[in-house]
Every structure is written in structure tokens, then in C-alpha cells.
Length: 195
View 1 (cartoon, rainbow, N blue to C red):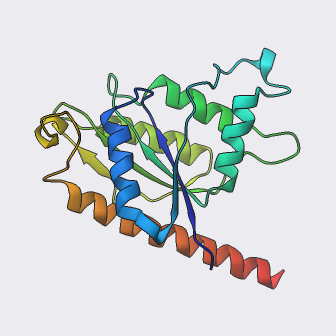
View 2: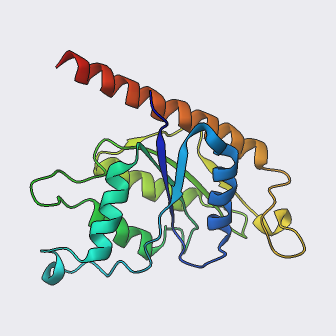
């Protein structure tokens, strides 16, 4: 089996957001066990049927990235007990069919992580995100999920996330998600060989 491809989608557009830093640490932990890309999507416009066909170039680009991925790993903050609107907008675009092709997220393995500065971490946002991505038929790895509260307790003097207390949990999730995705890829390859 070739190297699997993980696409990380961060729910915050801020350049140095804690969740982007969390995704970068996940990339470091994954290392050479998989290709790991963080999706850039700040140029994706708000979904509007007036521009749905043909889709804007940024939408084509993110669709191709999601289509090429074997697994999608979401890293989301929590805003008012929900995941951010920019993430909802992106998922809405990715949930639409592209011409005659089915939506690119259908059947994709998905994992969810998140951190905030408060005590509730991202549990509410993650539950809402699971509801959405389950509805669009992604293959959600419900355990382990990772919610890290009080992230400011795990940053260095420069404000960089260090995960002094929580790194082992991110490592555990990375190991589990890689195994989860590999199994789905192997199952698909076996089915294709039978056809």
C-alpha cells in the first residue's frame, strides 16, 4: 500500500491560531508515516447559488485537495458552543456534487481535535461537527477525539503551543487515525480487486 494522504482542515483562519499550531504538531507526530497537508481556504467565498456553477477556482482547488486525501482531520476552535462559520461554509461547498461526480467528502474517514483557552475545550463544537459530517456520510472516528482546555497553560513564552501535558493524547489520536484510515484504504483496495 502506498503512503496515505491526510488533509488537515483548521477551523480558524488566524495565521497562528492555537488549532493551526495543534495541526502542525500533529503533522510532526505523523512524520513520514503519511503525507500530511494543511488546507488553505481563506479565499473560498461564501456559498451562493449565483456562483455555484461553474464553481470559483478556490472551490475547485479545495475540492481536488479533499478528493485526493485518504482521510480528513479537523482541528476546530469553539465559538459560542459551535464550530466556526468559515468551517461550515467550507464543508457546505465540499458537500455539493461537482458536476457528475459525487461530493468529495462522502465516505472519507474523519477525525476531530480542538483546543480553546477556556474550560469547556471544544466538546460542544465537536459534537455539532460530528452531527454535520455524519449527515453528509463521512466515516467518523468517534474515539479517540481530542479536546484540550486551557491551552494557554501549554504554550511557551512566545505563545507557541508546546502541549507539555497533552502531547501523549495527540500522539494516541494520530496513531489511531492512521490505523483507521489505512484499514479503510485496504478495504477499498480489496473491494476494487474483486470487481
